[in-house]
Length: 337
Ligand SMILES: NC(=O)c1ccc[n+]([C@@H]2O[C@H](COP(=O)([O-])OP(=O)(O)OC[C@H]3O[C@@H](n4cnc5c(N)ncnc54)[C@H](O)[C@@H]3O)[C@@H](O)[C@H]2O)c1
Image (cartoon, rainbow, N blue to C red; front, side, top):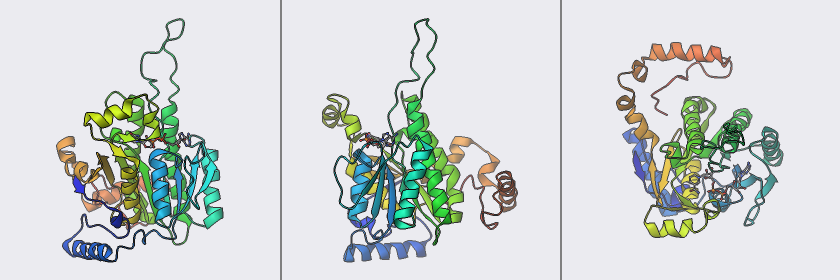
């Protein structure tokens, strides 16, 4: 776990977090330089982005911050932007539908010929499918799991499409930052939402050793409770929460973390937890504590040869041989992502 101090200036230049000392010193020097020159958003200027669920709340704040940093943005959402943002394109998209998302990505490629940034953000809350619902004869009602369709499957479709286009463009690569949640790590009493968000964290962990092969970075933000229109649909809750002293975020706090991850190439496979407007990188802590959690599982410390053998097996299973460099470890349970 690493507490981070992120400000607008950090969107411009890399912020030092890890690496060897030389790399760290270079990063610090860059960071200081960025503070001195403070050219806000210069790292992102001219890039292109697709943001799902970008019409409201956290997504809209991410769109505003990307646009302010000189990024060309296409929003895919079921509703138009709640506030117009100059230069930002909108396309009606239901992210639970593959065909809609495919059209969204094709539109971005048609507009700009490449996609540098993808933000799978659209998500809806738990609809209570796991709680006791019975029909007139007392039988349990088949759950619809709408929350999974948008919050898990929709975001997975978005990541898959992002990888498809980023792998094939020249120069190859890009960055994906998914809006996950605190519920991706701790999910009390919201089982379907918790499953969706844990699913997205799991997806990131599984993909992070692969994506780097294609110069793609995959990261997440995990907001705690955030004051957004979604939360404000629940009468009186938000003012009570602000008064209660329970840590709350603004959408802007979350957007700052997301755009920071877009701009800073040090990050792959990381999650920034945002709580009460404070930032903490959490995946490094999870990695450090794996032995405590898993016990003496030998796969946590495989030799190079063992990793190679398992990597070959996974490659042949998915017929990836032609697509990945044989030098890359694609099987890295405890990775240096
Ligand atoms: N608000 C919080 O406390 C909180 C905390 C952690 C994570 N999150 C996550 O942040 C993300 C954004 O939530 P928010 O609070 O800003 O909500 P919001 O309702 O303000 O914004 C969500 C946007 O997604 C869009 N959307 C919903 N279903 C869609 C679909 N099928 N296809 C396309 N667009 C769709 C909505 O129209 C809306 O514009 C979600 O993934 C949510 O799970 C929110």
